[in-house]
Amino acid sequence: MDLGISGKRALVCAASKGLGYACAKALAQAGAHLVIVARNEAPLREAAARLRLAGGSVIEAVAADITTAEGREAALAAAASLPGSTYGAYDILITNAGGPPAGDFRDWDETVWQQALGANMLTPIALMRATLDGMMSRGWGRVVNITSTAVKAPSPYLGLSNGARSGLTGFVAGLARQVAASGVTINNLLPGTFDTDRLKSNLQAGADQAGLELQPYMAKRIDAIPTRRFGNADELGATCAFLCSQHAAYITAQNVLIDGGAYPGTM
Ligand code: NAP
Image 1 (cartoon, rainbow, N blue to C red):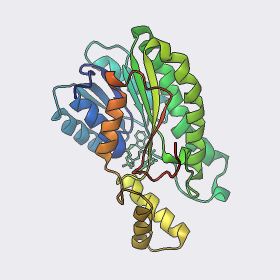
Image 2 (image 1 turned 45 degrees about the horizontal axis):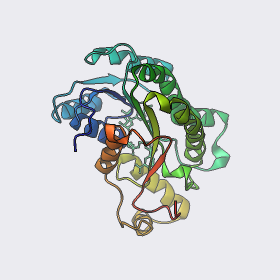
Image 3 (image 1 turned 120 degrees about the horizontal axis):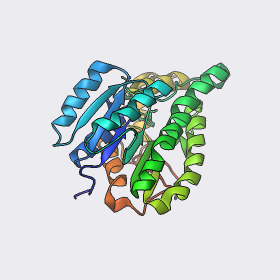
């Protein structure tokens, strides 16, 4: 299927590996020009080189911490290196960052909470604030925020994630309807359990909290997913690219679960 986004300019945050990279790959395969961001330069450059093999689009890499004002500034400035673009003039924005640490609510003081809110709520909001007016003035835009199934089914050991991402979700529910008439959609993508490096550390934290060895804990987790497997990042990437496509113009303000059926609700 032609997604109709060839030549669109996209900023994909936290994209040297895992879910962010998978989104970048699917967008590059659809012909979008990309700026990808991650903190560590060497893996980021390797990721950019792999993405260039995916198609004829321009791929720029910005080594920066997207949760800082300086990092966001660098990511916004890099839009000018894409064809036909200027500072901050992205058509597509994929927000993503490392998730907050797992742990016990007693250990999370105000500083820890500020970090989680900064990374998983305020950073996406700042990036939308910087890019939405441009999208609206051009009459076309797509924002996909990678959040978590935790906003629908909170995880007991990921309280920082449950809280920060729910705050973003509430904000987006209002904002998406405010910008929809200008041809801009904003949706959240809610991953369940995907086989990435992040998952490995979360599984260990979950096993520790449940008092189980890693292997039996993993088997228990897989057994709780109707598809009986963890997700593949490319499956999330393809869904992200579809939400950015011309075909998804009538989908906005949605929280799209991609979890192998793990969430047990009817809706
Ligand atoms: P991952 O495989 O560990 O990849 C994380 C990516 O983000 C890397 O490219 C990393 O590169 C980059 N990154 C991290 N912090 C950054 C920062 N401050 N600034 C710029 N780049 C940053 O993780 P993942 O599994 O793809 O998870 C991505 C997000 O989805 C996380 O917020 C996670 O909590 C959430 N999520 C994941 C799952 C899952 O099952 N995997 C489920 C629900 C939610 P550098 O380290 O070089 O910066």
